[in-house]
Amino acid sequence: MPTVHLLDYVAGNIRSLVNAIESQGYDVEWVRSPEDVPNAEKLILPGVGHFGHCLSQLAQAGYLEPVRKHIDAGKPFMAVCVGLQALFEGSVEDSDVPGFGVIKGYLDRFDDSNKAVPHIGWNSANTAGATMYDLRPDSKYYYVHSYKLPYKRGELEAQGWTVATGTYGTETFVGAVAKGNIYATQFHPEKSGVAGLRTLRAFLTGEGAKALTAASLDGAVEFKDSLTRRVIACLDVRTNDQGDLVVTKGDQYDVREKGDDRNVRNLGKPVEMAKKYYEEGADEVTFLNITSFRDCPVADLPMLEILRQTSRTVFVPLTIGGGIRDTVDTDGTKVSALEIATMYFKSGADKVSIGSDAVLAAEEYYSLGRKLFGNTAIEQISRAYGNQAVVVSIDPKRVYVPKPDATRHNILRTNFPGPKGEEYCWYACTIKGGRETRDMDVVELVQAVEAMGTGEILLNCIDKDGTNSGFDLELINQVKSSIRIPVIASSGAGNPGHFQEVFEKTPTDAALGAGMFHRGEYTVKQVKDYLKEKGLEVRKFDA
Ligand code: 1PR
Image (cartoon, rainbow, N blue to C red; front, side, top):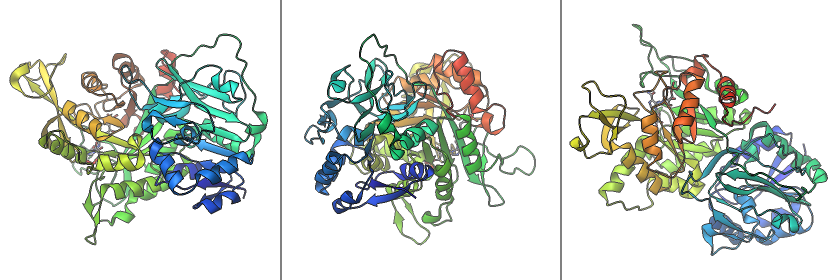
């Protein structure tokens, strides 16, 4: 098999990239020291996390010169995400550390005054007519980043680069650049479905470099927001009473059948179902391990195998949640949340989702006067893998109050009064899958975990879960107005119209469905076709 060399310089999550390369019939060989670089014919620089951290790691390990030589020798070179950023002169993310300076330009941060940051989701790589590694105008690519090179028309082109752009809000940024032997993408090709695999293949085969042409800079080009509405399929997974790992789904978190036997609902096999949703066009797949497999050694966690298998065939982002906290293994060894997350990342997860532990960490944050000491699971994991890799999953419950001053919590006036006609409510956070309610409201929680470095919120709602009655729009609006990071609306989706409603009536960044997909009532494709019909931009399914 032909080989490609991958630079292994940080504790990053690059399993997905390896899987994507292997799916194209290439073998990955690791570059583990600077001496290995000259052996590489084709070299890929993956990038994760922080700009300064990435470049100082490369510098300390002695990679800067060998990588430069590889590029100068005209050998094929590809850089991904922070790898692309590293090719520029510098970034405001860490102004003390210089970049490679292969491309002139300085990165800044997205403006978060009117949109969520990080920019997470499927956006364009618009080449304005140029040919570039099989990027296509009607395809979408998966981005996750807070920093970007602002695109100024003609500037990079004047240096001989071919450029592809995306637009988020009113900001147009560089999505990919190429010149000669160099190809760099801000998006993750390995997570961009068929469109991503296609452009990766164009690099691996060298066809993309041969076909490279420049765009004509004459004439007007329209740069309009091209981020699509993200539709996520979620699989709650647990062992049933027979010991099999199954996809299940509760009604307000009760996952047992209503009959006398009260068996755990079995809706299918996790790996097969994830693949089906990927093929139907799900923009992401989330697994929530809703029981913690307490009697099992951590290294044998069944979810690890599920992730390994899924990540070989599903090339969109995979999130895994459940049981991510400091724990004690069956042999008495202490295992940190970071170590558990690392196992998940190495098995193919792109993000981890933290539930109960986040609530406890937030309680501590407030009790210590809003100070951070860097020791929570959220801080440790986001420091090692980047904020975008940490999701906090919230399981709130509505609490009605008769008047605004009846509670110290962040309330809202509701259009759906309580059983005694109460016109106000707040949302209490719960832990342990909704079994224990805490004296903390959702606003307090999301603000605390945002301060800790969470990249995204998965916002469930126990009252709505499994009801098929639509999302809790009031809850989503309250949370969205309290933070800057993206929010995934969850719980209550029963038909495609509910997705339209949540995207039109709230500023949510993504919407998630579970039961309606598992029970076969609607496919992911039907939801996306419906949204498109209603004029909302979605990622079309690339064949
Ligand atoms: O606390 O870090 O161990 O994480 C446990 C995780 O498991 C949390 O993310 C928590 O939300 C989840 N969880 C725990 N118990 C249950 C349960 O159902 N008994 N599931 C559970 C949460 C909610 C969503 C669901 C949406 C959409 N499920 O995942 O998919 O509500 O459903 P719908 O579209 O059918 O309405 P930790």
